[in-house]
Length: 138
Image (cartoon, rainbow, N blue to C red; front, side, top):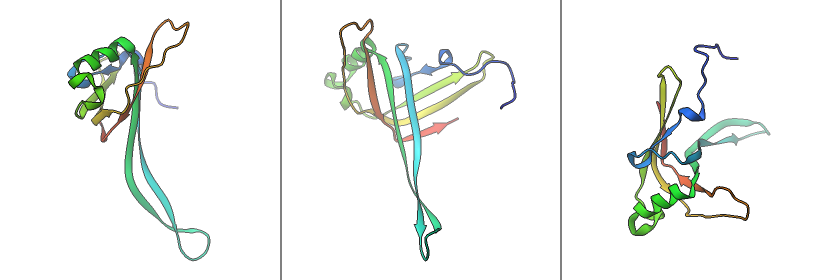
C-alpha cells in the first residue's frame, strides 16, 4: 500500500484528451497499452538457457459520443477519418493541487469507423480502435 501524500487520487474528472490540439469532452473511455515480445530460448535439456526480446507493440481505443465522432468525421479529409494522417494524442491527468502527468500517444491513426445502436439506447457511443506508434510517459 502506498503512502497517502495529499489525499487525492487521479480520477477520470482530471483526464484531458486533446487529439489535434483540441480538447474533446465527449470521450468516456480511453485505453492504451504497450507490450514487448519475450521468449525463452532452449538448448540442452528442458529448461530455458536464455531469453530473447522482440519488438514493442502498442494498441488502444477510445470510446466517445457519436456526435463527437461525427464532428471528427466532418473535419476529416473527404469525410473519412481513416484517411487522417497520423497525429499525437496528449493525455493529461492530475490531482487537485496542480500536479499533472502527460502520456503522449505518438503516431496515432484510427483503425475503424464503426457504429452500433440498438432499441432503448439513451445515448449513442462508438468505440474506435487505434494504432499507436509509441507511448511517451512524462
